[in-house]
Amino acid sequence: MANILLAIQGWENPEGWLARFRELAADRHHVGLWPDTGAPDEIDYACVWKQPHGLLATLPKLKAIFSLGAGVDHLLRDPQLPDLPIARIVDPDLTMRMVGYVVMHALLHQRQMKIYETQQVDRVWREHYEPPPRTLKVGIMGMGVMGYASAKGLQAAGFSGIGWSRTAKKFDGIEMFDGEAGLKAFLAKTNILVCLLPLTPATKGILNYVLFRQLAREPIAPVIINAGRGGEQVESDILRALDDGTLGGASLDVFENEPLAADSPFWRHPKVYVTPHNASASDPRALVANILAQIDNFERGGKIENLVDRKLGY
Image (cartoon, rainbow, N blue to C red):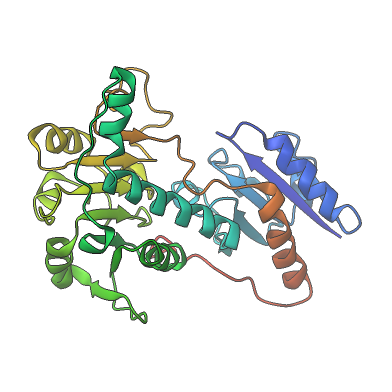
């Protein structure tokens, strides 16, 4: 029997995670919820989201750490993070939620829905030109599991999906670009830019005014969809680009500071969709079985999958 500690901050229902873990692991593992940690020297595994910095360093027998979300930047910011295996969640539920978000927002912008939302409030009946999806290239920055699945989902919706990654990758039916050398050509072909990159020193602030000016401008003003991390966007640059026409619209699921301040201009901006970091929300009903299977396999001498490379930051 293993002892599992859940340390969750910033989510509304950590007790729901505890209940699901106990439901599925009652016959083989003991599960506790921080701050009720029990005996620190008896904890074998930690499953965390934005855990207090320094907490994991107080668990001397810890074997591995599991992030409860797709990202791990919240973990890597801990200056006292133990040198132990860290696993990120890769699960069909998270992937399909992201695909749905990306495809939905690409369609919202392609169909000019911001204009129609305003017209509904004003009771205006007027049709506007909507370019066919096949005429728009949706460029995805970050071609991991979610990026690839999103590109295929976009193609199924009629868009032309292309991708950019830090290192060279190949996928059947998807035009790919890579590295600094390929970024300019990728941007020049992209009408709707989707950011699914992990937050690393190399990606911090990558969504900036200089980048926006390199996006394709026909047949619509370019659009950005950021469902990656808030630290990747320069928010003052987004507002500037929206207001001067460099960008035609934005869907922002993440922000530099969360929750988004009540006085942020993004809330009421006529060209912006704001969502509360829920593009690929973690659901304990879907994800806990995945984590427990990893723990059970590791206890039997197997390997943990989807390990984080600390040097790369993901």
